[in-house]
Length: 128
Image 1: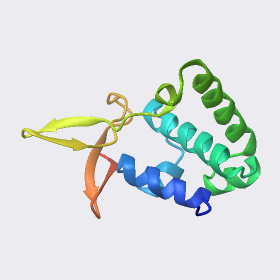
Image 2: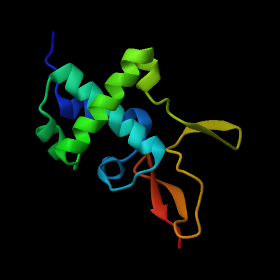
Image 3: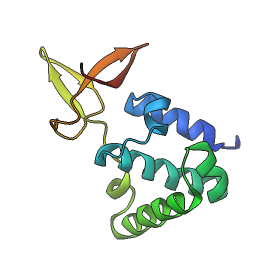
Image 4: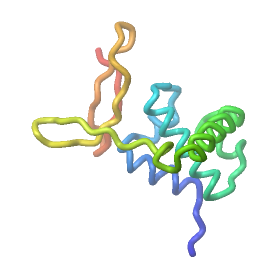
C-alpha cells in the first residue's frame, strides 16, 4: 500500500472543491472555506500522523489553530461519522448546467466579491 502524504491530501481536496491553493491558504474566513480547512486538517492528521506545527506550516496557520480545527472535526466525527465533517462541494445552477463553485457568504457592502474562472478553477476576486 502506498504511503499517504499530507501534500497529496491537500492537492486532492483543492481539486475536489475546485478552489485554488492560494484561496485555501488565504486569510479568508468564510464558513464554507473554514469547514474545508478543518476537514483537510482532520484528514491529514488522521491518515498521515503529521505533527500540528508541520501541518500549520503547510496551511499557513498557527499550530494552535490547526489543533483547534482537528479537535473540532474529531468531535463532529465521533458524533456523526465522516459525513458530519466532510463538506459537500457546493453547486450552483448556471444556465441549466450544474457547476461546482466555492460559495461565499452573502455580499456585504464592504466586501463585494465575484467568482471568476482562472486556469480551470474557480477563484474569488474583489469586485471593482
